[in-house]
Length: 297
Length: 194
Image 1 (cartoon, each protein chain N blue to C red):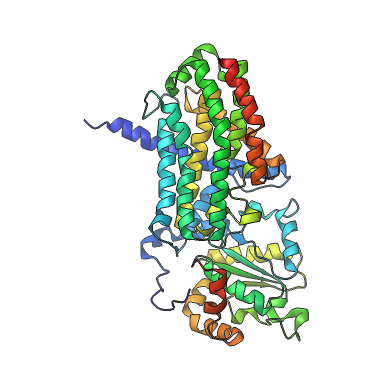
Image 2 (image 1 turned 90 degrees about the vertical axis):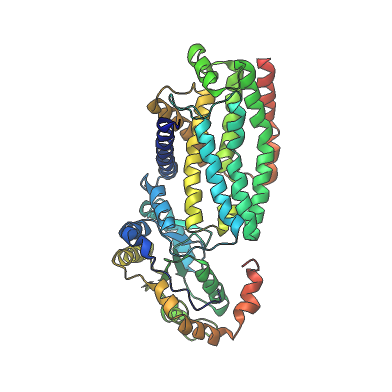
């Protein structure tokens, strides 16, 4: 028997996530503009941009893998989204979905890199190198933050994590997990590709990095992917540290909080170089992460 | 690049219905190629920063030519720059617009008798809107951008169509200036992956 209700719920969730993701991207641009004392674009600007990219009358292709990369990234983002408990909706659930989501959130970067490398543009190659280095650098603190969390709550299951947090208070009220929160927030900047760690798409240095050859419909897919990714990452953060959510409004407010921390950090810090980023990640966040893990033992 | 036949498929019949929506989106989201020639590039920072802030109209400087829509030719154009301009223009994807900025791309400006300045840009790539002045103030540039938005809305900004339809004419002028086969000899060297 085919579960129609579940499928409809999943599609509705996807539409909601895409829309809110676009609005988040708009809020990001608007808030940055306001911090720089500009007026800034309207908050639905990313939707207009995506429409425009879809309406391009020509699209350049560099082969099958080049077209496949954005689709692969989009698929990974959507899958990650369906594993995260949002309100009382969670399509897939198993005993270790925390690890699954943590890794599915990094797969889109690999998809973009796969497509970018096949375009043959030297800037894409450079961007991919930088992206892989950032990923390697941020794995260690990312892993430590999640280990601390799992050790404290004793579960890998996201829905159980939410239930435990609603019984015993949010994760950040536990001192050891507050340290893990700081580590995760630093890693979160790199996950979102925001300012101190936006070395992948450094617009002034390597002209958008992996995105340089994308245009038209592929770029529109990448924009949609970024919106869903932004929604999924902020929701994941809210579920891990801010006690999850019982309804979508609650989730939205918590996501907005997380997003604004990221925006404020991004708008005051300049960009790290690659070696500085790797050195930074393997120094302070790693030390704080190890302390957090030791405290939860 | 290079092919000149069998590519006039720019009016996609399937999307005719959505054309007004796309037109509105194109008007509201012009991305500029970050490519500055001559002295006009210095007028872009005031436009982008707090005083004039073109981002409120959805305009954004974008370093990748594949994603960009609007090409600002900011100042005089030498033959060396023109080669890059043509290649960048051809890399941009199809509804694309050119804004010539200042008197130099119109008639040479103060370089009217120079041996090494391209006097009339319109012979090599189609220009949609030209702003006179040396230098045009940021207000004038803003006005030019508004004019381009109006033309996109009314469908008059059809430089990209003209480039496709009169490709032989533009190609002939370009070849006259640079000599035959400059694309294969030089542009291929910069863009080896295409």
